[in-house]
Length: 103
Ligand SMILES: [Zn+2]
Image 1 (spheres, protein in one colour):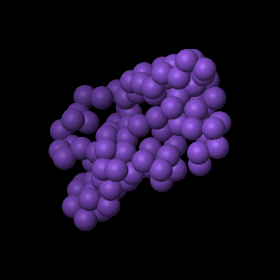
Image 2: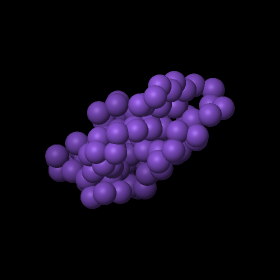
Image 3: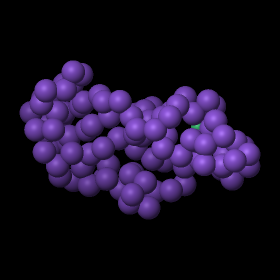
């Protein structure tokens, strides 16, 4: 999912919920708020132009694109980390951690 938020303060709050910003507890990431495989915050709504599925207003823009990676057999999210754990070759890293009781 691609998301453009014109309000700078709100965009900064949303950025703090990206895993690249250190939000790695596996629970409070922005993608789980939107129940999607991933969220990319855009600095410019122009990236939404021409997408098959998008919606824009003066203050907000949303676009839907296919996620990278493979579908996790447990949570159905798409992840580039599916299969990294040899003991769990068909699930993502978050599900591996969940099965291990890490959160
Ligand atoms: Zn999973």
